[in-house]
Length: 299
Image (tube, rainbow, N blue to C red; front, side):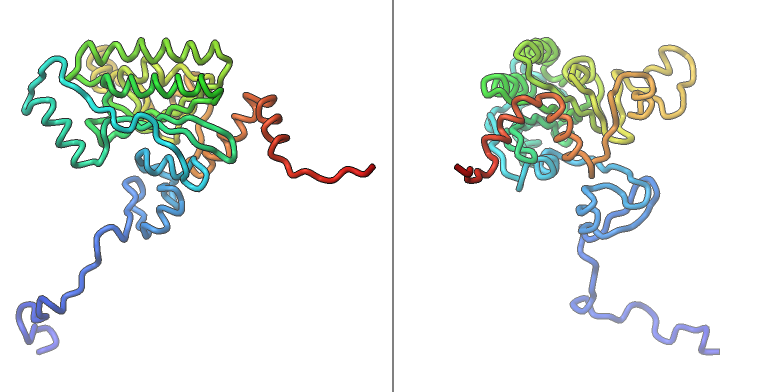
């Protein structure tokens, strides 16, 4: 019964004739396991077409989504961490920073820029989790503080996109002081009457949650984002009780009054536009009038 016997054993296709699917063409949702092309995944702004799971994305993608035609001017792009404590764990801190910079192409865990969102001027600070877990060191605090100063000087609203594991342990007290510095700068922004929108993405934890991430005129989040101070395991061990279902999810936090609303990434740009129009109608109306096409008046 040759039907059930392999006539030729082994793989006989020559190596040079083998065809393999190139990496990066397909996306598999980690939640529902749906497979889609990367082109379709990008078209949906890195969300799942079936279950709407929001993938983690970085500052490059957020800037492309928010800024008109992806046109923006980056602020303080060359700032880089020093080593005030001469910290060493498995490697010296300067070596870790240099290796991460080479691997990610980033200078630190936050990028700041100004541009236009549907024609409205906006300053954006966006954190990158892939740079040492989005940890908040002295450079992160300084860049956010300078971005706030730029917003104040140019009378622009400020958007903070948080994505962080918390304070950077390699800088100890220097890192923790960024909580106070950024909070003080935001108080000055508020005194100037300029809007501050804080957007929390997955994950937003630790000292970032305990400072600038929760100080917005509006605190918003993406669906399913992990938001909290300490991790759920630490909390469970501390209180000795099981935690509620979906504890520290954006939906849980919204239900308990710590968020104003949750926004789908595909609707983010339009909802931010509507919010900015709501927060500063007089300035926007004046700008719209100045840029409106002129028509000839009859005598």
